[in-house]
Image 1 (spheres, rainbow, N blue to C red):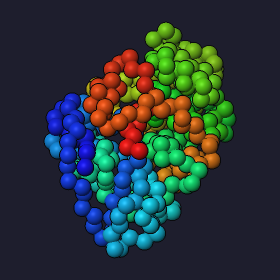
Image 2: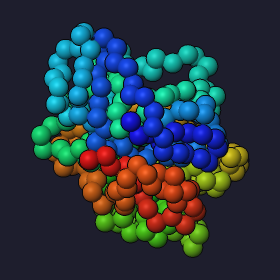
Image 3: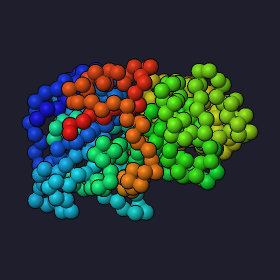
Image 4: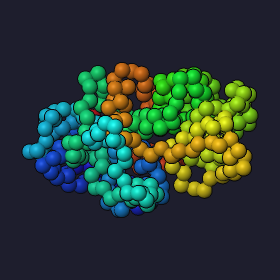
Length: 337
């Protein structure tokens, strides 16, 4: 089968590789679509993978083979990824106490990602795609879970004023989830003109280019005291400091981005307001069916976010394009259909 194989930092090559083996609890998927994730771009840019790895975890696929222990799925079922079995009321990340996203989250060795024609997956980590949801839409389930998890962690309340910094895929989905959760105003900060336009189209109350305005001063003017919650989804040098300065006394900052370079932070500017800052990482199992239901209901809008649909052969050039600072694309999806 054809797959995009990681060779070294900054290099993906399309190669013929063996089809993955199917264990007793696995299914074999023919991949339909796989969205390019920001974490894949980081792995690619910083070389945080073993040569020979195959990335890709935002996918939809069709079951073409299943192990003898698999129940609840049939050959021909359309499926997308899930967070595993749900344990209501007891959901916690099954991670070690000193887990490091830098050292562990980006170094996983995988020869079985979804930038490939076929992928073997434990059936417990799959959900059936509803008839009304397309394979393309289903490939956006995973990034939507990240936004859902961040918004649920924020303890947002009806009537809150919210700032989203960064209008990439996660930021735009966080913007929509915050509005669905009761935010009365959602402000968005983004340097890309194309992404600012999209944030406006998706319902942002106001959208700002932080290079042309004192964002904190503007938000204090709009709200009198600052926003209630800021979601930091950019990971650029000034954005964490901006988020911390923008919130009101006892406000909350949710750090969603993964910054790989040192970022500016001056606590004396905001510590006196006793701000709460919390990191959000990935999603819990219970967030996944919520994401699929939001897609099915049409409450989250995905289509305008998908800038390009590319064949697997174009993935190297797409990764290079997405890493450019002036990129106009938002979400790029690899199509196998």
